[in-house]
Image (cartoon, rainbow, N blue to C red; front, top):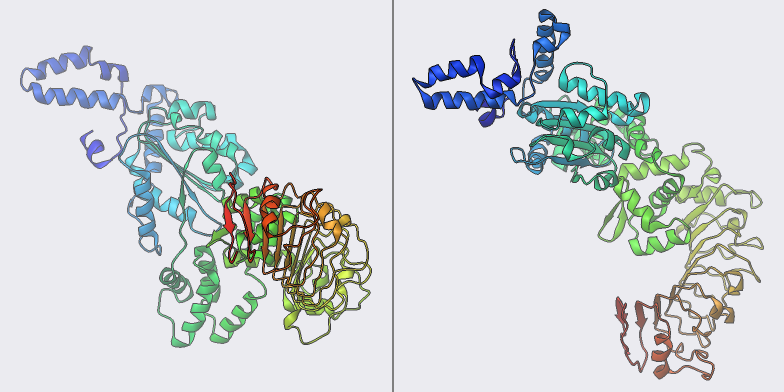
Length: 639
């Protein structure tokens, strides 16, 4: 018992031909024997008594109660159980695993081994990041410090195949060394007084946690429960401490790749640069480095170059399938949101991207957080980001069914695909395209036809540069949600009145020839209107003043605007920006008795807009500041 307390060794008492209660109470034969020995050395006998009491309180074996009282069968069952506990004889970390030592030490510190209480900790990260490797490594090192231990692997797959009750029985069998019915009802009873270590690997549903580790109360003092998952939300709902998995740094990644590509040897000089390219491609993902290293082992330099060139177009299938597990678990809306971010919004400022995603109907405030919790995206320095291989996976998913036919893709963003589509017959239907992002300012190869008019199911357009006539009579499509045009040369957006019931955002940037805006009566749900750098624009259509859903209005560097409609109906507006528009202060009436709005009246006009929390009014000669309870940002530069 002293070794158990000081070294963390496991003690399994066997109560041979004696009842545990008799050992604990120490009467009859035990009491008589102790009384005799106490006459010689009372202090030593006291330590014996304590040790036996402690042993009797442990979960042990009573041979007469097992194997139908057959002693030989009972002995075999006991031996088999102990053998299964000693299956991992070496309790030290496998130092051959690149980068594992520091990660195990960090996790071990978080587990607070040796302290009281019951700790549940979740290793969280994306697919192929080394969660299971870390969990198994820490399990190897500490499992002998517990009365019982169990590593339940592949819970995602096993629960779908065999059900949760089978996994519950698996835990009981591994802990007890025999098959026991009862499942969940027995887990909390059997382990309540035992110090146990349980690893639940690859959890993907809350009901799995509730069935296998429902509460810390299920386990005895000092127990530790380790969970690996791709979904941070599960851990937080179950009140589990989150432990982020850290990907390999460059040096570790090179070591791991060399281990598999060159069997641990240093590469020849010709291979060094190619090795760095592969490591950069894998981005510190251990699974990818292992797969790529193994596939390139024993290949010559030309084959390496060919493999790298292929990877840039076609991802490795094993890596792709590993990453797609997370994607396949998403809802339809979550999948579409992820694909939009992967194709259009990586490295884009979060606030800007969120506006566009909201216009597309994705409800991104909740949707983006769900993707982040599933380790599919990150927010880095205020911009959307994701692992290179996850972005590549997203691109591949969009292109995989028709890799050579971009007109059949749901999203188009690559220059060569846009050029291919622009070279097609102007009458070709392009109904499968939902969203397009193109920079035509760098396309000198061909004059763009009015292809946007043929994309009748477009919901998102971001187009930079000419087309001189992007549209024709069928533009824009009725389902359009978000329109972004930059550096285009047309003088108007479209001809005549258009009914666009889904259009929520219009952003026009540096349209130097724009002289008129459309009739806004056909855009009743417009929420965001941004007009930057349109010097020839003289007025905003009067219907603009009837947009009662507007939440953001930004007019920047539009020096020609002389006439602007009333903003008194913009009761929902939150962001208002006027900058470098010297004539905008001659706004039309805000109140019934006001014929025009001068600089001094801008204060009262803005004051009426009760939801405003972001105000930019630059180059106004006079502005009287007023108190706003919810104001977050105020810019009165050059006023």
